[in-house]
Amino acid sequence: MTHRWPGGARCVAMLTVDFDGTGNEVGQGFDPVGIRAAGGYSARRGIPRMLDIFERHEIPATFFVPGYDAEQHPDLVREIVSRGHEIGAHGYLHERWEVPLDEEEPLLRKAHDILVDVAGVAPRGWRSPGGMKSAQTLRVLRDLGYIFDSSDKDYDLPYPAIVAGEQSTEMIELPNNTSSLDDTYLYVEGAATPEEVLDLWLAEFDAIYHDGGYFMLTYHPRAGFGSGIPSRASVIERLVPAIKRYSDVAFMQLGALAEWCLDPANGFQPAERWIGARP
Ligand SMILES: [Zn+2]
Image: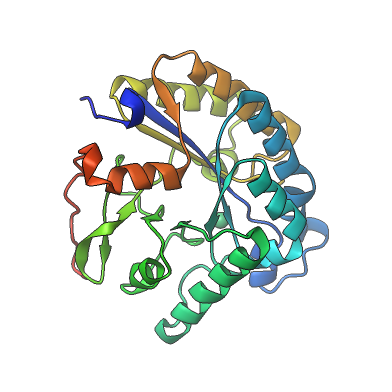
């Protein structure tokens, strides 16, 4: 299968980093201390380490940032932006997205406003912190000017987002694979070593490349379930140059890919969105 990608690339590669700092613990009612402090590693060590890796390899990345974590670490969020990366929204306290419908819009707007205030630039995309959304989530995000969602798991290419029950021409779904291309599942449930994760991600990339597809990696710069610590960060450091050895790979941020997909002049033919039982 071949797809047409920006610049005539054969494959698109996207590195997405879910900030997931102490807001994860605070949102669950825990003080982020002791064994509950692993989220603190994200801001103190993991993200600075990722920023240096991206700089060494000239990679534009997308960081999904919960509003609470942006409030706690405004200078770091500004540094992410100043070093050329994109900020996407990721809830306020990393909610599992079982929020009552009447509380959802204020929550999305609150997190959005914080990111605008802190980062000085409006996010253009969202990733559900718990992987869920309601029938109105994307309508609210569309009204806020968002052009992509990166939460669904039912495809491996972009497709039109369903906004207010209709396939949208203003917003696209950039699905992420949380089975084999997400660190948390591998390190926690799979008890994998960094070497095993690197081998898996290289194999995934190779298969996707030969399918002419879309490689989106999702990982967390935390200690604990994430990739912040040196041995796991080194997986990213080794993965990137390995991908760069393939010809015609475009490393992209999600906003840029969404913009390209949504511009009719580019002739991108997204898959039809399967519309499930709920509109
Ligand atoms: Zn998250």
